[in-house]
Image 1 (tube, rainbow, N blue to C red):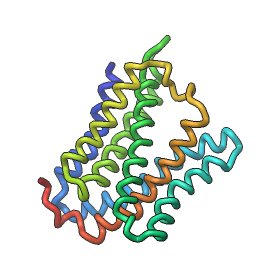
Image 2 (image 1 turned 90 degrees about the vertical axis):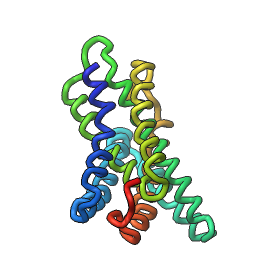
Image 3 (image 1 turned 120 degrees about the horizontal axis):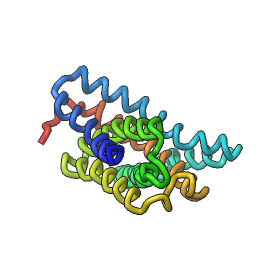
Length: 210
């Protein structure tokens, strides 16, 4: 139960830190730089192990498709840019929610308590995930939507925990892995396209917190 509580609290820590230190321009720039590094690392951490295990380039190609398809659609029809970014955001966040669901299942004690290194890894990496969700949603959609996005991670974790070992990460198939690869690519597109526009061009420090 302690592991579950820590996993639920962790996604909120990133947004809390962001709100507390939002007025400090140096901190905001550091967060921008962190997100541009953290998201590729999170994506590669989800996709590359499966690609290596299967000895296949398919997950990497699906990842690339998820990243490039929104850009291609925008180039074909310029008027679709805003809607494409919104769709890519929803798709990308759905992957994070699915991952949170599987993590919740991984925390279920079946025959014994989950291993401490696994728990620590789940909890620690959820802090930057919560920060990334807030960083993506807050400038464009406001605090309410951003808070809803972070809350969705927590509810998905609770759902995975409630459903138990049937959703254990080792139990899902190739379809889930490929879906996560595709939505990870979409998330990369959102961060480096929409995120750069709303955070660099407009500037965090000029936006009100409310």
